[in-house]
Image (cartoon, rainbow, N blue to C red):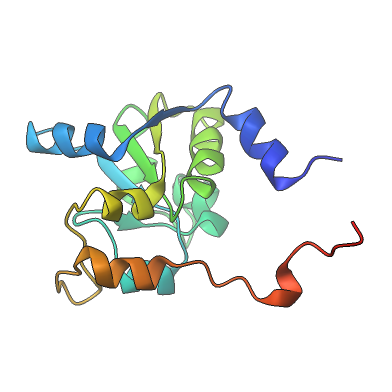
Length: 156
């Protein structure tokens, strides 16, 4: 049986990761990759990297294909486009990037450390209304919220 961490480790054999400073330099140089944020809509609304698009992980595959309610034309026609996949910590984005590669996308990377790392690097973030979110506020919004009953039992 594979666990979540095993799936990520396996996907990392195929998926290239970039660091926040690599993405920042690329954007500053005028590159315009598709910034694909695969977090849930409420997470995305709280804060995101400017110019990113939100396609939740749960509808990613349909969003990349024509003729679905979830179709995102930018993705459906963008199999050769440069795509940077983003999530909160860089794990969901690895799995999503792996799926994109399996679907024939050819220029896909995952943002290692996700928006948490982007915020730690003090790069611009905005909320759903376009308001700037400073890194201190982002840290609060991005903090883990694991409840006690979600933690590994001591008997395991």
